[in-house]
Length: 206
Image (cartoon, rainbow, N blue to C red; front, top):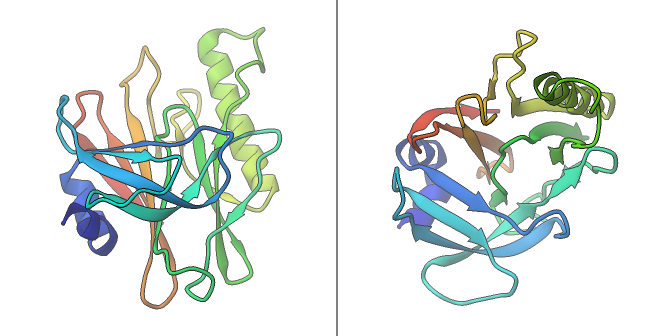
């Protein structure tokens, strides 16, 4: 039931259930993948969704389109499949903790990217300033490639308010990203922002 609700009533599911998504790392490729959904026993409850290495058959396992995390210097915009190309209607990526998620267009098709900051950049700055500039680097790089920032780490040095704060000295927030394609073939992208105590803070949609 939880898997069906995630796909068919996505926004309500994300508003009422804390979701943690564990991906396959930057070595994984975009495309079809198998996931296991299990109830979380830790603080906040909700569900853990884990990308599997191989195909499995079980009631708590489902297939979705996976978007891996990519380095800022080499990231590619990943085009989500049309209904003619794939029957998969769900898109998942691993949890955002300091990364940026961007959305764009390739003709009539939706493109997405999960971008990791360059942790070796701007080391002459203070840790807080360096983290802020790295976020700015990612937003600029996405914009140059024709993509819009959907969700990124909040920047204390500007007015970028549609974000989250995962910093150790900050609020400890994290983001789960879920995409779902409707019957008309249009992809909707949802971002669940969760507080440090694992409660749902907000859900954004693009």
